[in-house]
Length: 133
Image (cartoon, rainbow, N blue to C red; front, side, top):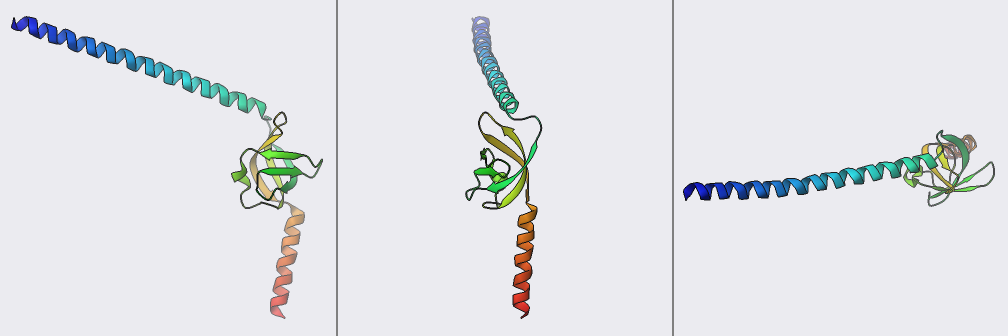
């Protein structure tokens, strides 16, 4: 009787273990599929963006979410406006990947345009002169 109860307990333990193992295997498979789908989505997004970054000069909108190029006055939506933070309303030169289909750019670097730098330096020197007099 005692052996029979022990065998029954071992069989129950094995059955529960197998059920848990089977469920965790399905969850792992689902997680892997989700990761694969996410990677495909990221790759498709990257394919839509130009492979090589372009350099474009223009003005950043006051909210930093739009960019108007000097060359053709084309307005682009900025996919990563945090990259332009602090340059709102300024004339800048950006290095960006362009998605022409979405009319969108992803900024990788930003520099204040030379003419804006000259204006800023000129204003600073005028302020210094006023302070000295």
